[in-house]
Length: 225
Image (cartoon, rainbow, N blue to C red):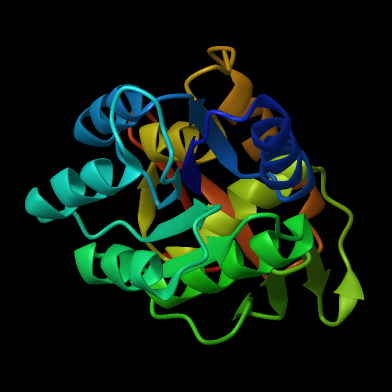
């Protein structure tokens, strides 16, 4: 999942980045003004936007208006110190999907982010399961036949993407996009390393990661043709 944070408060942005990137393993980009947010949303693809309304150079409401004028459907969670009902109504009428008044709990923010991501994918449950292999997007944990399967954060992130497209080939570029933000610099073979490690850890399961050279990877039943 790739997220964009548009927030000019350095301390708040750092706390949100730590929660979403380090604790939840999302790929997260951050901009500090409205013009940069508008450019990022025109040029990039994101699964969720966390948007402050009081941004320098371009107001958050204008960023939101321009985004929806382009018919972009990416979910937007507004973060604002404006608590008046009129401000909330205006943001929601412009296309915001949720509205949080500052100050707020980062834990609540995390929960709302997960809820919006589930809603945008049409997912009502946080668990994705195939052939006894389950990923819980709420906790980031993986189980095999009900028993914990120890994976690193990156391995779990690769597995989540592959599980969501179980039986279909996932392009390598999509994995890179989902796992890394613009500020990260993944090595050329980083994805291959994570897939190799994941395949080894799945060796006791009825599923495996298949490689389609030059294209991508597929999570499928081990005995599938």
